[in-house]
Image (cartoon, rainbow, N blue to C red; front, top):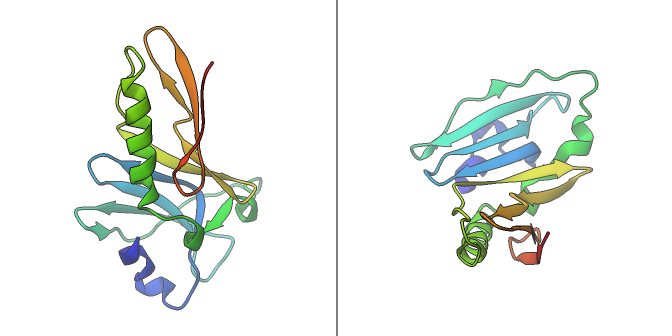
Amino acid sequence: EESLRKLPQYAGKEIFIYSTLYFYNDGLINVMLQHPTNPKYVDIYNYKDGKWSEPKPLQLSVRDEVQKRLVSLNKIKFVNVAKVTATYNEKAKEIEGAKPLTSAYVSIWDNKMRWYPSSINGSRERYSIQFNDDGSLKAFKQE
C-alpha cells in the first residue's frame, strides 16, 4: 500500500481505487486506479515480486459509471485483508468440507466497498459471511 502511494504519477494526489482490488495468497495484488490526470480514465496495476507494474489502460464503455465505482485509497487499508483471510479461514475450519481462502477482494459499488468472498461452501452446508470495511466480522450465518 505504501509503495502504491509513492508511485510518481500520483505524487501529491489522492488515489482512487476503481471497481475491484484483488489480493492473492502468493502476494500478487491486482488493482484498477482512476487515472492521475484524466478522471474519465482507469489504469490497471499489478503488484508482484515487491514492485508495482507500469499502468495498463482499461478500455471503458460509455455505460461505465466511473464516478460511482470509486473509493479513496485512504478508506481501504491493505493490512485488513489479513483480518478477512484469518476470520474466513477460522470459520471455514468449523464447516465440513470447506476450503481455506486463496484470494480475497474488495468490490466497489455506489462508492462503498465490500469484501469478498461473501460465502463459505462446505460439503453439507453453506454460510454467508460479511465483513466491515476494516476487515472485522460483520455477520456470519448459515444459509
